[in-house]
Amino acid sequence: MFAILNFIGLWVLKLLEESGRVMILFIRTLGLTFRPPFDLRGLLRQIERVGVNSIPVVLITGAFTGMVLALQSYTGFKRFNAEAFVGTVVALSMTRELGPVLSGLMVSGRIGSAMAAELGTMQVTEQIDALYTLATNPIKYLVVPRFLASLIIMPVLTVFADAVGMLGGYAVSVYLLGSNPTIYIRRTYDYLDLEDIYIGLLKACVFGMIIAIIGCYQGFNAQGGAEGVGKATTRAVVLSSLLILIANYFITALFF
Amino acid sequence: MRTEDESMNGKQCQRGSDETMILVKDLYKSFGQNHVLRGLSLEVKCGESMVVIGGSGTGKSVLIKCVIGLLHHDRGEIYVDGQEISSLSEEGWNQLRKKFGMLFQRDALFDSLSVWENVGFALRRHTKLSDAKIKDMAVEKLKLVGMQNVENLMPAELSGGMRKRVSLARAIAMEPAILLYDEPTTGLDPIMANVINDLIVTMREKLEVTSIAITHDMNSAYRIGDRIAMLYKGQIIEVGTPDEFKASRNPIVQQFIRGDVEGPITQGADFHLKLS
Image (cartoon, rainbow over all chains, first blue to last red; front, top):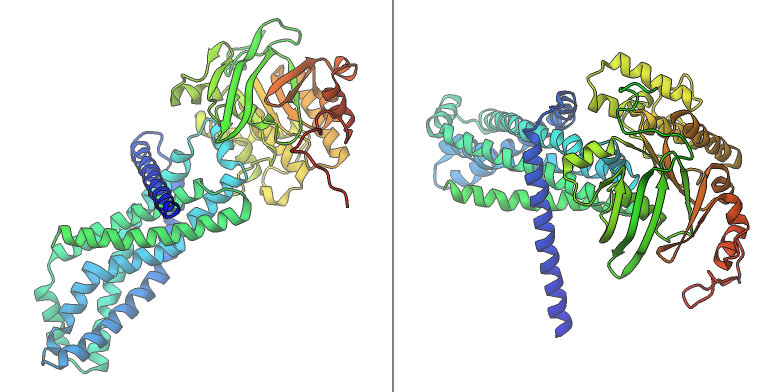
């Protein structure tokens, strides 16, 4: 009995401690983001890695999600003769929900893991210590450009995902299921508000911050060689994916 | 006479100076239940080359990491160039660390940057010099450690001994007053180890730096040290010149420098050698 309580207690303590340390990293990163010198070259390099190289993955994810969404909602809506609203459902689901969430999950798998692996390797090979000895703050040098790049690029990727998702939905509805293209576009246009897109983009920004902070945090805390780096990488992906889903609910509830 | 620019990162001084550069007083550092440093005291004079020896896991690395602020000590005082370090702000640390250069055990080169970018890293961050000028200076430093035509290579393309030398070039790029060497010869063949030893001696003579080297390689300790200090059970148990060390009557020192399996260090419950 005491063993179980002890276990739970330790687990809770560890959870609180870790959350606190993640928050500290987040706050210090925010503080250093606005303090000169600004490392434009590092930022551009990260934007290339986080953004440009993620575009194919996000496009494919978005397109197929929009397509399957059209197919599934058509099946359901047909039962009560509401096929005309497929376009609305695809547009709302993509912009409010699936565009940001799926892009976030894909980027977390692609980039969050890479950040944890790269910084983790630097940690276990003393490169992070070397930065300190060269009078360079590793948060300023390593975390800030990754953080900013994720923050800037996630909304952009989300816009791409939204766009190809809606195009995919349109293609499936019109060319496969024979919907009327004019009505499809009309229904999309009439019921989609700019606010839906803004909420999606706000989510994307939050997810971008989660991916970078968790990835970098896990990397900094990697210990003990290749195995430690592997563990840090796994933890980065699992934790940032979970946090993305949790944050997603709360942001949605906030703007409900 | 030195120009202001040359001594921008602290004072260099002649060997045999009576001034103290680094003073460690009654230092304690624990990791959980593992009490690594237990009241360690050590004084390093300006321009002196101090070698700290001791077995694996005795806390040699912990000591120099405390001196440069990579670890924070629990109790005790550390003075660097007259400045007590435990009350330093982050900005204060950044200023103080510019006086230091450190050579890491695993060289710690940035593998995403080329050799010259590694060597010129601090110059790029802390000066307004152009990249072309910094590259020239990096080439200069590389020449000082006996490396030529490598500036455009990536660290992964270098051998272990070459990486160590590039790392040393990086450590001296800002012309520091103090150099810290963390096991400089570990993992190198005997010839390369002596190349590094000779370089360390050269650094001391050419750059007039104060240095602390930690090692368990006695050959290296005798070669590079003005004085040697032995760390045992969290304290410095003996300090002296290489000749004094060789003649030491302390049985712990004698066992360590001869590398005997039997002796006071290996007695006790936590040290069993099973050869079967």
